[in-house]
Amino acid sequence: METKEITQKEPYLKIIPLGGLGEVGRNMTLLEYKDSILIIDMGFRMPEEGMPGIDYIIPNISYLIKNKKYKNVVGVLFTHGHYDHIGAVPYIMNRIGNPPMYAGPLTKGIILKRQEDVPMQPKLKITEVRDGSKIELGPFKVEFFRQTHTIPDNLGMFIETPAGNIVHTSDFKFDKYPVNEEPSDFAKLTKLGNKGVTLLMSDSTGAEQEGHSLSEREINKNLAEIFKKTKGRIIVATFSSLINRIQQIVTLSEKSGRKVAVVGHSMKTNIWLTKELGLLKAKKGTILKKVSEVNNYKDNEVTIICTGAQGEESAGLMKIVLKEHPTVSIKPGDTMIFSSSVIPGNERAVQALKDDLLRQKAIIYHYGMMDIHAGGHAKQEELKEMMNMMKPKFFMPIHGQYSMLVGNSLLAQECNIPEENVILADNGNIINLQKNKAYIDKKEVPANFVMVDGLGVGDVGEVVLRDRQALAEDGIFVIIAIVNRKTGKVQTSPDIISRGFVYLKESQDLLAETRKKIVLSIEGATGSSKIVNWTYMKDKIRDDIGDFLFKKTERRPMVLPVIIEV
Image 1 (tube, rainbow, N blue to C red):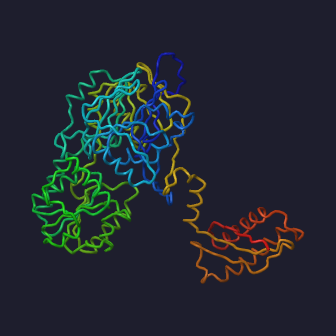
Image 2 (image 1 turned 180 degrees about the vertical axis):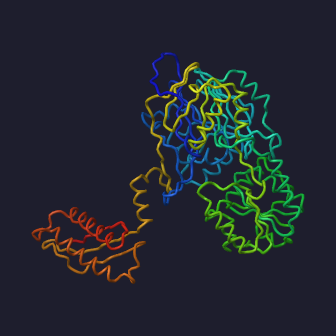
């Protein structure tokens, strides 16, 4: 789609993605019509390699903060309870005036529980919505419809605006035999499509994968086979948000006469929430109150569900494998089921985890061996099926890496949506939508990463990240020198502190040379034996010693001079 300035006087809608395009996660989109803004989702993504110390990356909301545009927000809609769609709530809502929120019951519960984990949070105003719920927010009329995913209460949205009707699919897949929820309502989807869809905003995560996503019925059949032939304990590692898989494990455990123990804070929280809401069904006594109760049963009467399928250091499974869990450790003959795919970037950690399990004589099953995990995203045939039901005039791929967006845009052309009507956008673009026209504006809004580190939001920028990377790669070299203010001479031999660069006790020759170089650098900077500029002196020491250490070691530690004047 061409990038143009909008010139028409007829009403148009601005669609502004602040995250979720060209990446997986950080989903957040603004719909702006005149003086009203509707927000869809508010998620985070995990840090990339090379971002030491960063907890999460969240959307940049400076567009809303500037000129207090957040006062125009009429509501925040949430598709479902995965953190890539709700995880940024504690870091954003209090900065935009805490507008009204709309979410399914489980999504609401997860958002409120997460608020408790982050200090100093305002009380949120969340209205529950369900399949078929209709709300009106300023110029926006919204109807919610259920979509199959890997978590209950996942909702797509049909949004009527003065500039045309928009369908937002949420993350979805078409499964005729899902677990723990009803299948997609194709009659309802067709009916919505017949209302006239100006723009379809569609999930793209599975757009590069041919065929149709695997049905949960197949997953259940394969898991049942494992339960049937396993004589020892079964340990299942999966995502704590994969509620439908947890339901399968609980049901299969009941059929096999097994009790279920839960390891991992987020896993316990989500199981408690879903049981309270009636979204997770378990017989009384199936789920043990304490993990320690597993010792009261035979091995073939026990299932353990835990977090940590991605090899996370602090997750439940890692504590079990490293024998740091107070109650559970791996026994020879334990059957370990990894019921999740490996997130790109985690391959090495997951492999190391599997190796440790095998060394402890565990039996492993993972999705590469048999179908015991299915993703929650539509593949090519399902994506085309959605397009054919919606029959949109314009199409905008969302939720995915750029190659996934491109893949989805090519599918749209296969479904007879003209190439010029496909909007392939980036975060920060402003898409101007009219009933018969769509443009990507030449103007953009800030959409760069905002990083969360502990309680700090946005206070770690590129300069701090570069410093952390330098420290991680080559360490720090601190020089403490006492200098006479009047003479400019070094009073005593400079002290040196090295962290992550060289081991001082084994580098005495290098340190002796370095001290001589420091003295020469300082006294060279004083010129005629008078201190002119202490900042200049520190910069000169940093440059001289940095170059000297590189020549000697071919490493560039962060050199930090500390000058004490006497």
